[in-house]
Image (cartoon, rainbow, N blue to C red; front, side, top):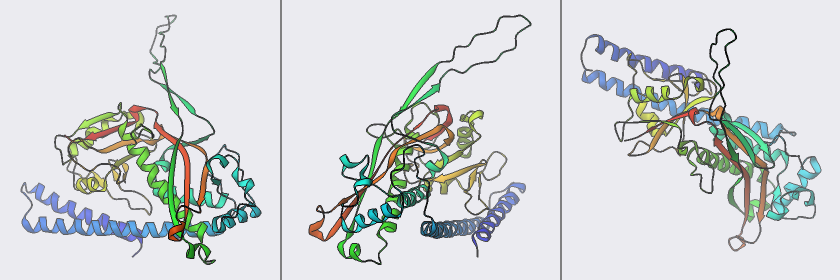
Amino acid sequence: MGITAKKQERAGLVAEARKIVDVADVENRALAADEQERIDRIFGDVDALGSAIETEERVAQAEADMNHFGRRTEIEPRTLEVETVIGGDERRSAFRHWLRTGDRTELRALEVGTASEGGNIVDDEMAAAIVEKADEMSFVRGLSNVMASSSDVKIPVESTRLAAVVKAEEAAYAETDPAWGQITLGSYKLTTLTKVSEELLYDSEFDLGGWLSRAFGRAFGLGEDQLFLTGSGSGEPTGILNEGGVGNVTATSATDITADELISCYHTLAPEYRNGNVAWVMNDSTAKEIRQLKDTTNQYLWQPGLQVGTPDVLMGKPVYTNSNVAATATGNIAAAICNFDYFTIVDRGRIAVQRLDELYAGNGQIGFRAYSRLDGRLTQDAACATITMA
């Protein structure tokens, strides 16, 4: 059974549960024991189908990534404005030779801008493969406003808006002086490190570049989501859920979110911010809890996505689950709805890799350290609303 068929079957099961509940509502009675048992079985099947769909989509994406990596020779790097210093088969060959042997004799051209760090800017193909894997793992980057810069970026923020009012003929115009603030996006270094055995390193059949691309991409993607969602702002970016000025709904319970609270959170987000890249963010355990919630018209809030690669929706907006968002517990921010058009990510330069020849030599291993420099920030507090548990 294909992904589309599974999604259609899942939607049919949800509709069946809806009918059972509707019959009980029309007859003004509670669910009978066999009806409740049937609904429990239905949602067990729904969860199983959801897991199967997620697995198939991940496999399909991985296959697409591998095919893409194998045939593409000229790839646009993540940065848009930084000068490309790597390119051509000769330099690519030199970089891969260095990865496997540590021989730096042909690597001087690759050290532009990173010699002081002891690292080497990766070739275009590997950089793009890392970025693609990171983007696959990080939904925040895919929804946000991304730009490149070689220096700090100062973003003007309008805190008082212009207002237009009706005036009689020849009447004086009403003056509005907009107030402006400023957010500065700087640079934080996101790093990761992995080790490769000497046996694998010297095995010509081992695709070292491809393996490192996937490993680094996965690490950067997961690391970015953590920073951009829950970063403390102290020595790291300020995450969306730690912005102090966003709208908030406080749940009445420490462990459960009600349908009314989700609706209130949705409407806490001002109407002008409800269009664009708007999405819900929550822990997977929270998503599991609210899948059976209904609105005031007795309709399920959660609507399963039917198209391949399309996320489920909550009140018409896609839902993304992430383990960095806290589960429902006292004082936790357990869910948020945000317009990611107002979250800006700045990339500073290109991804770089350092080979560590001596650090793990005693264990017969070679280390590889990778780093990227970036920052991210919500530029309008009104573009996000959260639910905090009691």
